[in-house]
Length: 153
Image (tube, rainbow, N blue to C red; front, side, top):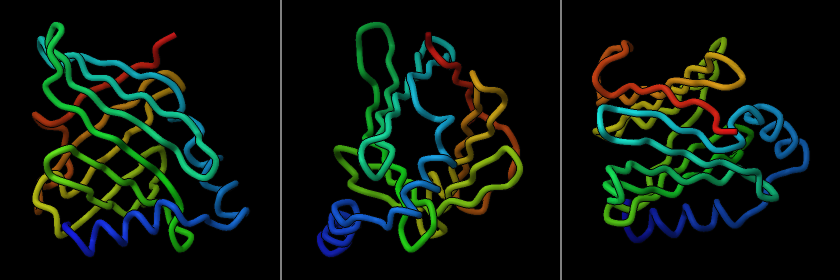
């Protein structure tokens, strides 16, 4: 998503949502607030989330020792009454994923994006969830792109 798409995303992020949408969003994703950590071999995975006025704002990192392998800015906000997950990466720009809840799982999907096309947060407890990333057309199973994060105290 470039030029016009980035402008649309910026307008969306800066525009306010209704008070009811804001309250519903805050309650639906209250579980994500805090700092989360996990391991994938020698790589440490971190996510930090907090509520900021009308949206959840997050950061995601992959660290190996003192080296940052990957970083992204994350947002969850309401747009037209639906949760939208926004990932902003330094070199590849902004990607939007529409959210849908099923039991204790949130699935964020963008069918036009190759990888990930779907991001799944499986809530396992107040202190743990598993994130799974799926390529376009990939079936829902836990594969090499899944990892568990636990809440840091």
